[in-house]
Length: 100
Image (cartoon, rainbow, N blue to C red; front, side, top):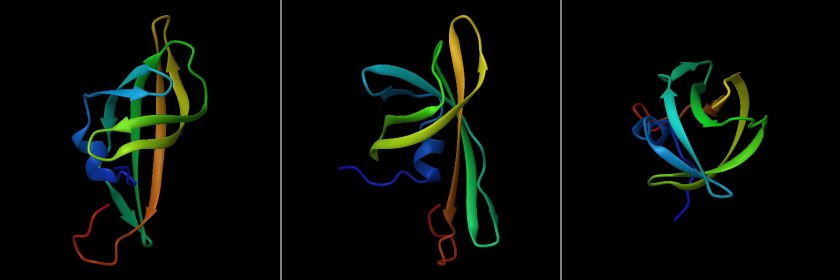
C-alpha cells in the first residue's frame, strides 16, 4: 500500500538502496533532522544516483511507504555518480509529538 512518506520513513531508510523507476537503484545518503518553524516542518534528503541524472521528478520506492514521486536537484557530480537533493516542507502536525 502506498502512503505519503514522512520524515520517519525517510530517516529509517538512510543507507538503503531504493528502487527508482524505471529500474535504477539510488542510495539514500542523508536525511537531516526536522526543523519546525511557523507551523511548518522541513527536512532535506541527499541521494547518490547514477552519473548524468538531472533535475526532475523521479518515482522512488520507500520501504514501508511505497512509491513516492520526489523532485530532486543535482548538487554534485563525478564521473561515476550524481548527488541529488530533495527538500520537503509540510504542515506541522497540530498534535504534540505527531508525525512529521
